[in-house]
Image (cartoon, rainbow, N blue to C red; front, side, top):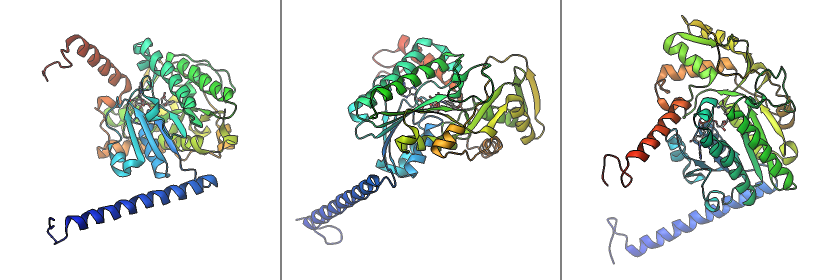
Length: 395
Ligand SMILES: NC(=O)c1ccc[n+]([C@@H]2O[C@H](COP(=O)([O-])OP(=O)(O)OC[C@H]3O[C@@H](n4cnc5c(N)ncnc54)[C@H](O)[C@@H]3O)[C@@H](O)[C@H]2O)c1
């Protein structure tokens, strides 16, 4: 028998460990019982929610939002933009499970085990990055998106939230667009959104109520996130005003565009994943707010006014053909949803993050296109130079 420093024996320690383990497991049983009781009453629907693309700009804000609300969260992501969930993983421990994997190839048995709702945010997230290599975009944004939806249905997932975009409305579609307005996608990115939206909603209809799909058409998002994006209009204009004291207005500035803060997007997704089916199953919702519909020139004036000595520069053409002004009544009525942040709040938030050094305007990963160009070049270089999996090293 070995005595410990305080005189206790190995036998004492084993017995203490056994008691501790019993206490932990009975606590876990009690927690599960409380959770199940609450769920039966639908008072607090704690769920196990899979967020595909959970390490991205929206995902790395949504994941802590869901954890804070008490849900268990599973993330499936390639982490193309770096380790954006480290702080959240350290804070929430095993409430958060992370799979560094691909929506095109992941193994459903482990990733979807026990999952009650899926939010799909994964994929190439803007027009120019989608145009880099169309076949890659089709394999990720279309085939990968459909694969995830259909595996979720087969695994018995009840709620499926697909992240679409107001860019499905495209160019010249008019003012006050509703979810029933015709779609005029003007890019591969937006055509892919239309195709997967249709697919997910069709799966829901075929399921006879067992698979509750919801499509959220997001306005252009703004705000600060652990995976920062300086390629979104509010964020990039604010960054250019801060760094260069210049804001460019392309294509005349009369184009309409709706905007929404990233935290308000997380709130909408949380609602869509957990609300009663009667309020959202089989529905499409525009996500944003009427007052955050602005013409690009108005946005530029607001940024100029927020950053002293900023000059407005008019650039003749705009490669981005989008022009739409959208109505957000449906989500307000069905899910009792209102946004909480204005564009001016977003400008101030991004400015504060730049001033404090919380975000780095020179980080390549904050520019979606630059990062995908870099990753593709790295992949092609590795393919042509690597021997036994190495380029400079040997083992
Ligand atoms: N940000 C916006 O303004 C906005 C507006 C409308 C719709 N959306 C949509 O919302 C979703 C999220 O956008 P975001 O701004 O967070 O973009 P993001 O690029 O920051 O996030 C996308 C995430 O998907 C991951 N990913 C890419 N390919 C993958 C694959 N094959 N398998 C697994 N993971 C993969 C990336 O690593 C990244 O973390 C996208 O579908 C985007 O199209 C965004």
